[in-house]
Amino acid sequence: MEQSLMWQCDACGKEHDCVQKTSMLSPPQLLIIHLSRYPGSQLHNKKLVVTFPERGLIFPSHQERQERTKEYQLYALCDHKGSMSFGHYTAICRTSWTDDASNWMFFSDTMVKPYSLEEALGHHTAHILFYRAVN
Ligand SMILES: [Zn+2]
Image (tube, rainbow, N blue to C red):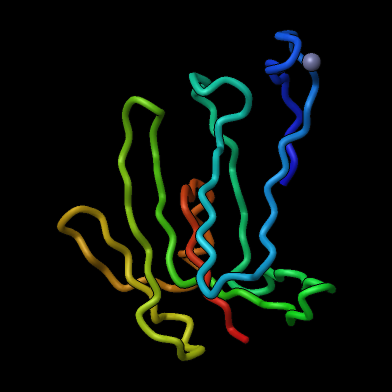
């Protein structure tokens, strides 16, 4: 992930363009993706809509470290509806690793109900995605 920003230089005190870069050298067992869905200003009320896969997220192999490519599978997500100052969080979690598409549960405060993979993937207001490595 790369982000261009201005940086206050310690040596001359002026602002310079710089690139902040974050990279992972080793693919993790658990991959937790926190989505920042506010375009531009944090006060913006219109959040981006997201789509995400159940499987197929690939972490490329690292040539020098001779590590294998890792593939990830979704096992939970946190959904947020509302704005930065007001809203409601819900959780959608897989209950088993079988390929049965109905092995999900939806949690909203004291309400818990069975859910399907299709319903889980329909949460375009997802806020945090939880993946585990499958290989
Ligand atoms: Zn400088």
